[in-house]
Length: 234
Image 1 (cartoon, rainbow, N blue to C red):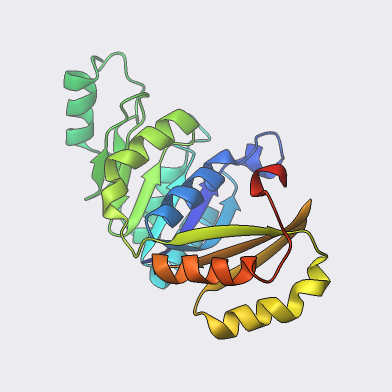
Image 2: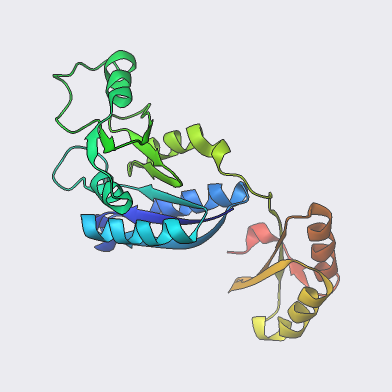
């Protein structure tokens, strides 16, 4: 399974808010074996949301969208999703029933439009907030508030499946340029994904869907570099 992530919000583009949702979601999807190939941030604009989501849903197995849910003037994500699918935005009776029966709200408590979702969407209930999320075919729409996003994601986490990825890290006390030959030899010797990241030492990341192969590749590297403790390197 491969996927793309779309985060919505002018505050992200202006640098006023750190995009922690993208980092958290990429990590959780990676843990579940989903290969995230795109992370895109768009403004609170229906046309931008619709264009990017429409492009990505045609290219990837799943698309996860966060931010811009709710009934206020700049919460336009659901309208953008509806436009991407050529559907109307309408009140979802299941979402409204959950809010009033399980969420403890009355209709008078809820702002007009709170339960509006793209026609035919599967609502995702918000256990720690108000605005519901939704699933439309392969597109998952989650809140932007981190606690709400994380809680809602866990309710659908089992729907994101792939081959689990095993990872080992070796930190070499050598310049990255000195490791080029050995890293190339590693890639020829083992069918693994290799990344090298300089810092205090060079952090060599080794990944594959085969745990024994990953361990063997890491052992091969450790025999050929002067290793330092990964916890002491940044």
